[in-house]
Structures are given as structure tokens and as C-alpha cells.
Length: 170
Length: 228
Image: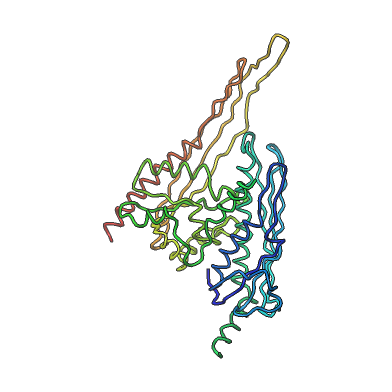
């Protein structure tokens, strides 16, 4: 991946951080898992990415960063199937936005992914053995899509060019 | 429940491939030791409809075990680690669609740097699966006050076909192709009780392919060592 020479602050809203997939006897903290991978993704995408404190709110103005990237939402859904003719389905969608430190929006993305898996008879007697890897690959794919989309996004390239120009004129 | 969340978080912690992530201990050991030949393995093209197999699969485990058995000097790096190293380029939804695109990806400087940082010399890309034929025969079962039982015979042919391409990572070229095809029949005679006898084509094909891959790597590495 091409790394953008920018220092960003990262923000995860409560809605994004606390999303869970639940089903009787099964609870997957998808928000927490997503934050972990987003942290790695932002570290790969930007020269520096540090999480901003919850207080004061960053929209009141934040200094020392070139931009703020916020994971606003994590929407996850799990639909259980059966072992004959209905597949288990996991779908995940995020809303991620990049802002100027002043709060002006540069670009928002809505990456998503979904996976379905038809269990065979006798497969995954412990359902977690099927659902957890399926959830993991769905999170990976959605965030992979975000990275590839962001990397080639004209708005992001324009922002990067503005940053370079600002640094040169300084 | 908490264990489940923790397990998922740990699984997801396995790494995003930005510049400079820490090399897993297993890879560090492989890269540092003079003897082993570190080889990555990956299911490609991964079937998006069966994406979870892109992180761990029974075929991968079987091939890895067989390669180690056949050539203990080969150190197989799991596909999870390979995909983490190349993240986000090799997820089922973002993977190269053609062999040309796969070769182009391996030829990219940043990709080669990521794989080189992990000490990998070769990459095994495997594909294939098992196809079942239409089942035949029948079994009748019945029960009464005095007991029950079945009588009959069913069978189903199955064919497992695996292909593997071996890529040399110093020049990003596909250097060897191996394949294995095994046909068999699942049978289930029933005389009072039905007794299933599996065909085991998947295991047999995997072991055959693993043996061939191990021999190919060993031969290739020796040839390359002579020309180095």
C-alpha cells in the first residue's frame, strides 16, 4: 500500500465501537474487533495515526494533525441458516469519514462485505467454529475494500496534494 | 461469551500489512535459521462463497503436514500469515482474478518487500476441490415392536482435483505446476445397520499433491542454489 504522508487523529464513535452480533448463546463483539483492524489499517494508510481523546470533542477544533478520520458506524447482521438448504449469512457495513481538523468533510466511505456459508450435516456442531471465521473474513474484506477504495480516491489524493503544498510553502 | 469476543479480537489482531509490522515469531525463526526453506501457502483463487477457508482450511493443513513429512527442511508459512502480509490485496473480495494479475501483484516492489521481510522464498498457490457424482442405490429401513433395521446399498462417486502453482518470489515467476486427481466411491452397505465407508479422495489427493510440491521445492531450491 502507498502510505500517505499525513498525520491524522482517529475517532471511533460509541456506535462503531460497541456494535455486537448476537444470537441466543452467541455474542460477537464486532465493534471491538473492527476497531482493532481499523487501527492497523489507518497505521498502514497514514504516516501517523493516533487516537484522539473522547474529550474535548474533536469537532470543537483539534491541533497538531492534518486531518481526522472517524469510524462513525458499524452495522453488522447475522442470519442463521441450517445444515440443509439455508446458508448462515454475516454482513458488515461501515461508515468512515475523513475531515479537515476544522471539521470540514473531505470524503466519506461506506465499505461493506457479506459472507454466506452453507453448513453441511455434522459440520460445526459448535456453531462458533463456523460463525467466528466467517465474521472475521467479513470484517477483513470490508476494511480491505475501504483501504483499496481510499488509496485510489481522487478526493484523498487532492487532500494529500494540498498537504504537500502546505508543507512546501511553510 | 467474553472468551468468544477475545478469540475474535485476537484473530483480527493478526496484522494489517502496512510498512513495518512486527514479524511473527514463527517467521522470524524461519528467516533467521540457515537451513529451512520458508515457503508461503495460499488458497488462490479463493472461492468468495467459502471465504472463511481463506484463513484456515483442512486442505491447507493437510498439504502443510504432508510437505513437512516429505521434506522437513521446508518451513510452510500459513495462508493466514501470507494474507496478513499482503493485506488488503489478497482477500477473497480483493484478490487478483487472473494468473496475469496474480503475477503482476507478486512483481510489485511493495509486495516483494513485504514477502521478503518475512523471509519467504516461494509461494504455493493451490486450488481445487471435490466433486460428487449422482448417488445410486437405496436403503430401506423399518422398525416394529420387535426391533428395527435397514437393508440395501448406496454409493456415490467422488473426484478430487487439486492444482498448485509454485511461485519463486525473487523474480515473481511461476516456476512449477503440480496437480493431483483421485477418484473414488463412497459406499454404504446396510444390513441391519448402515455402515458408511468414505472414499477419502480428498485426503489421498492432498497427500499426493503435498509430496509432489515438496519434491519440486527441494529440486528447485537445489537448482537455484547451484546458480546463485
